Image (cartoon, rainbow, N blue to C red; front, side, top):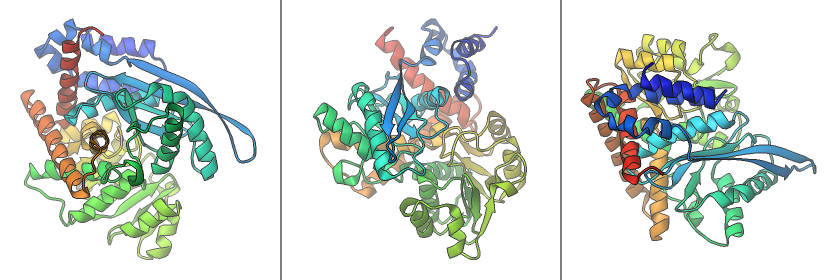
Length: 450
């Protein structure tokens, strides 16, 4: 049995019922076959066996009291996966779907994503099955404080630096940081994504969405193409989607969709960015409100999507930006995109495309940016925030944005170079996986068996 297959089977046996983690691990491990043949030293050092096992897994109970005086209990997670390149770095997600497998998949992806940035950060991820939707500010504050009473002992500016993710924005980070500061009696850069009032970085909020568009820009430039004047579809309506839409507008593209769990908007004139921000960032309302202000736009509920598809990817477009959640784009969606003329897919979400969809994109040789490369702008700018905190300086938005653009260019070049080395210059899945793995693996060998 091939070496990679042996490791994957071991993983399934020892970490049962973690389907998202298996999916992420299998994609990376399968990509590494040519690298392992060329560099047998990685097998000698058991790098694959070591890299698929987190250095530390922290599971804990969270007790908190709701506004009715009822005790609530949730699960908390922090997976500190790999620190070969620097302190663990990765977001915290609050969503009912969070479980050990989801957090492990996200943490595993984070290792290679962080490595591709070229910055000194390791990989980790955390979260809880707590659902912030429908909760009052006081309930969210009490939950975040309870969450931090356990997590604080495992994190620090040179140990593990969390950030936000789905369900965790500046409000939640503020509550968690406040409790951390009280518990440790220190004011330090232990979180990124902080408010600009107390150590946050300009450009951090925009970074993941902006970065995925920059990555698409560089993929297309390599083919003498551009986004200007092209219709683009974007899934989601959270932070990543909003700032993907914003950067598409900046580059002269026409983003025509956004979505949430209940349905989607199609606005052929281009999504009204300020209206979307008002509804989602200020009022926290559903997208059904959008069409009340834009009568020419259409709202399509999920019940009207073609069976087995995500309606966003049935809309004809030049480029698609999956920016919502994992496995939102399946084989049928990929077929619909290609049938309708899509030439570019750049992933703002983590692992939004199923393996079958990815295989089709790679086979057809479209400009396809996998999440660990295309959405690395968020964590890259988090590291820039860490650098500003450590040196007690504050960079302008323009400085941060310029650094972000260059980082995304470097990631594209690095992935392309690695893919070309193994004879598939357009396969950025192969290139990103090999380039990220190689950097971490080399560091692990140099640091010894620890």
